Amino acid sequence: MTSASLPEREGKPVGGTKVVKTDAEWRAQLSPEQYRVTREHGTERSCTGAFWNTKDDGVFACVCCDQPLFDSLTKFDSGTGWPSFKEPVAEDNVSTRTDRSHFMVRSEVLCSRCDAHLGHVFPDGPPPHGLRFCLNSAALKLVPRFAVNEKR
Image (cartoon, rainbow, N blue to C red):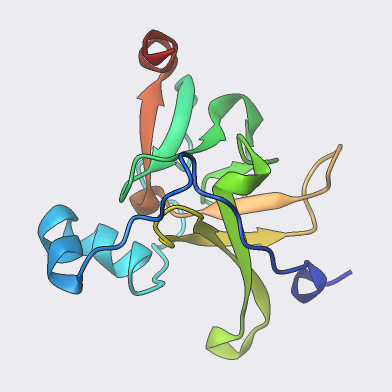
């Protein structure tokens, strides 16, 4: 199976409503690097992002819209230099699309609430699903576990 054979799927945003903003609104909200990665489908260099080797406990949320995306309990060291996860907190929280940029065919991962580019998913991850969600730190923010529990 190649990464291109992973099916495209449209997730469903938490709360059911998409976040839609103008380019100017995204630029005002995000740092230049966050904007480049999430809105222009950029990639940060390996081993440079804030979360590639963090072991902090919590939930990684979308930097653009705060939707919960990945739990730190599913994070693993893939040896790639990017934060890697086995699975999202809920399948509907992310969407996947075929990405044919840079002379490659990959499966892009996006936030289902605001369509922020998060990274890519590959079929070479650990059990039980065999997936590796390889993400950009610039697309994420870590919400500490105690703060997540306080919201419930």
